[in-house]
Amino acid sequence: MPTSVALRGATPADADTVAKIWHRGWQDGHLGNVPDELVRIRTRESFWERAAQRVGDTTVALVDGEVAGFVMVVGDEVEQVYVSSDHRGSGVAGTLLAEAERLVSANGQAHAWLAVAPGNARARRFYERCGWVDEGAFENRVPGPDGPISVPCRRYVKPVARPLPQLGD
Ligand SMILES: CC(C)(COP(=O)(O)OP(=O)(O)OC[C@H]1O[C@@H](n2cnc3c(N)ncnc32)[C@H](O)[C@@H]1OP(=O)(O)O)[C@@H](O)C(=O)NCCC(=O)NCCS
Image 1 (spheres, rainbow, N blue to C red):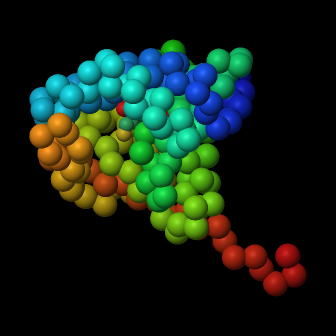
Image 2: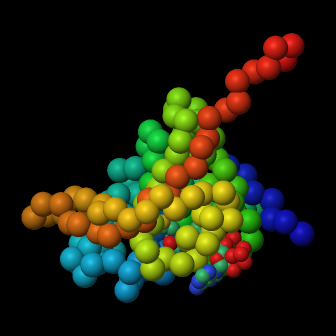
Image 3: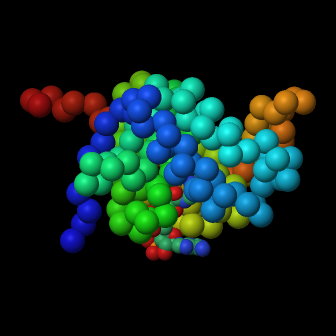
């Protein structure tokens, strides 16, 4: 039976759970797939700091009242899509990504985009199944303590504009 998923904007009380899912999931998707320089600054503490700072950009998915995953959307970018390991393969991720697309559209954007590490095969397969298209390689400039860190990424895009109302609607 498909999992029943509820969505809502995150509150500061969610930040600890978001940080736990983000910290574990980042390792699953990124270790071995990004430069060591980036791994060095993604300390455990950095996830708790950023989860607290980014509450306003975060939407959480709830399964049985518990946070099972989250997305962060800024403008036209889907910045983070994370599901806890015990909810992967359940449809929670698809619900979150559809909500992220809706939020990008609500931001007045025609296209959504996201960056993914080339070696993050599970995420890439998931995005492609959801209708996202690989637009190619680019260097993501991630802020670091000694200046930006260059991280090879793939750029995925998807049109999200809502259709114009038809005459008679
Ligand atoms: C990315 C993520 C949100 C996707 O959610 P999910 O619930 O795992 O996604 P699904 O299981 O619905 O889909 C994953 C697809 O990849 C496939 N897959 C699983 N492991 C794989 C692997 N090692 N290599 C390639 N494909 C893989 C699955 O079979 C499935 O494809 P299918 O539907 O054609 O069978 C989730 O895996 C996650 O949180 N990962 C860690 C964090 C992360 O990397 N986030 C993305 C950052 S850009």
